[in-house]
Length: 125
Image (cartoon, rainbow, N blue to C red; front, side):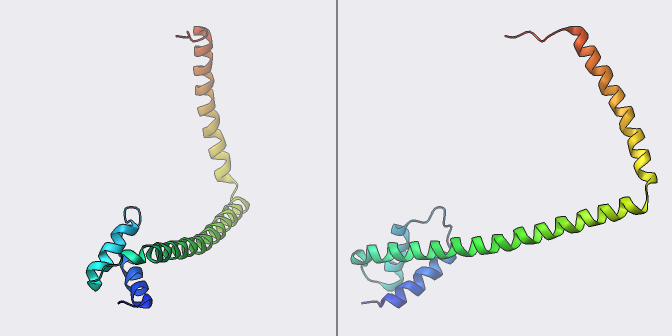
């Protein structure tokens, strides 16, 4: 008979190289049976528990990695905000040009709004 530690090691290796969205405990058990050349029907519960433990550890690792990425993104956002503030403080002439351009766009939008109002309310179907 195969030892539990041998089963766990091979199970984890198999799961690391598998698509976890489509792999079932039955697939894992049959692969282990093939690898070790033994019937593992009496180990179904043990295999299921080990798969659950593996998935839980993967989930926890993903959570821990995700937290680091979120912190990095927050830090990057703060850097971007500081760069914008420094840019605004050093050169105000660009702001005036942007504001003038925005007014032109707003005038066009105002004309469109007036034309739509002249047509009346939209008909319901």
